[in-house]
Length: 82
Image 1 (cartoon, rainbow, N blue to C red):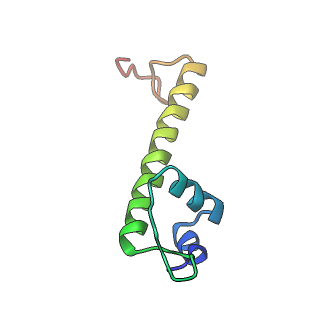
Image 2 (tube, helix red, strand yellow):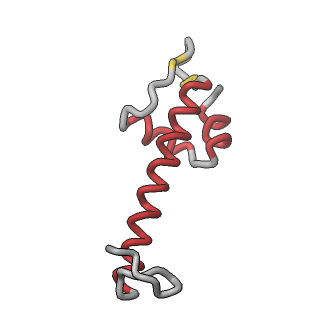
C-alpha cells in the first residue's frame, strides 16, 4: 500500500511514517518509480512500535503525575508499596 493509505490505517501522519523509516523501524519496498510500498508486515511492525511507545509514554506520565500528587498511593489513598 502507498504511504498515505499506510499512514491513514495507522492513524498517524505521513511525516510520522517517514520518521519510522528513518529510525529503521520500517523498511518499505520501492516501486519502479521510487514510491514506498508498505506490506501487512510493515503495518503490524509499526502498530507494535506505536503501541509500545504510547504505553511507555503513558507510564512515564503516570509516574510524573504520582510524584506531583505525593506519590506512593493510588487514587483511593492506598499505599502501593513504591
